[in-house]
Amino acid sequence: MHIVFMGVSGSGKSTVALSVAQRLGLPYAEADGFHPEANIAKMSAGTPLTDEDRRPWLRSLAAWISDHELRGESTLMACSALKRSYRDTLRSGAPGVYFVHLDAPTAVIAERLRARAGHFMPAGLLDSQQATLEPLEDDEAGITIDVSDSAAQVAGRVLDAVTAALGLSAPPQA
Ligand SMILES: Nc1ncnc2c1ncn2[C@@H]1O[C@H](COP(=O)(O)OP(=O)(O)OP(=O)(O)O)[C@@H](O)[C@H]1O
Ligand SMILES: O=C(O)[C@H](O)[C@@H](O)[C@H](O)[C@H](O)CO
Image (cartoon, protein in one colour):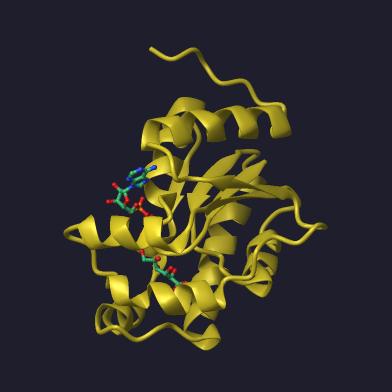
């Protein structure tokens, strides 16, 4: 099983996914680390990526999922995966890819982006992220979770939802 935390920039993918990966003991990928330099430079300059910019990046993420699948390992990833077609590419990596869409009112996310320091992604790109976002459709395996509450509350809720949906067991909290 492969779990992908999706959503716009600032929705809390990295924060929540890392904490859930640690609880479940799964290999973790931060999709930002797979972007070519040119994509990072483009976003840093305030220009949204195009489908073409994202294509090789998504393929490399699908390959990461596929490599683990071939070794019989489950994984967890933080990746915006904004469009259905992007999720199709990720799904091409393995049969069981489950998406957790982290969602919140735009004002909540905008405020978190304004407060975030030391990240290349400008808060000004939130509008284009929202415009590009295609929410999960009924036939896509996954769940949408509101992330307006604190990171600890959200991580707990996500862990419960994911373990229930996928029949996983989380070790008791230390
Ligand atoms: N539930 C939460 N409550 C309050 N702050 C949060 C919550 N989740 C994340 N944050 C904070 O909001 C900011 C954005 O979170 P994070 O970097 O995890 O988002 P992201 O979706 O991974 O963004 P990006 O796609 O731009 O990398 C961070 O400063 C993080 O500490
Ligand atoms: O598809 C995209 O536009 C990108 O993945 C962005 O979402 C950024 O990588 C990320 O949000 C910044 O951390």
